[in-house]
Length: 234
Image (cartoon, rainbow, N blue to C red):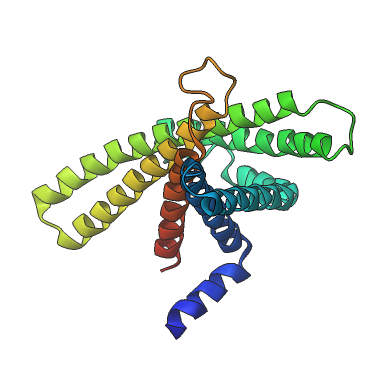
């Protein structure tokens, strides 16, 4: 018990860890709130609790938006350090990663403008800026899925070669990397489903998801993110 609490405290003390915790609680609250509000006709107290959880979820989402006001420089530093990728890296992965970095870099200023418009700091309509954010986010997620698929293809080729020579330790590591990429695809697919839901009506299932389904997809993605971060730290 004490070890679990200490791990949680260490997680909350880091910016990346705290953001993932807030994201998980945000979507988890939306999931539970959405389920409870569906039972609104049968139980008034459930309806009230459900609405409170949905409001709490919205406030946590706003909190994350404000915190991202300071992420531009760290993203820029990462994009600069990656550049066009290492010369010995697979070309497909390199260019997908470069395009992903461009989409991620553009996302932040668009979100800042949208936030400032909602806060009435600047006199512009926020709707189109939030749409730009969603498009850039969806683009980044789609590129991430393509990158993971490419990595999976390369890992499977390596695994076949290792199985031929019977090197157990390398096979174990490759299997672990394959599981990691599969989790990344699942996480990105869940977020991409939500991104499409937030697009203008008429595009696939845009605007059709109930709150509980948005919460379920977001919670799934968030929990996977926590697992991956824990594995990375380990």
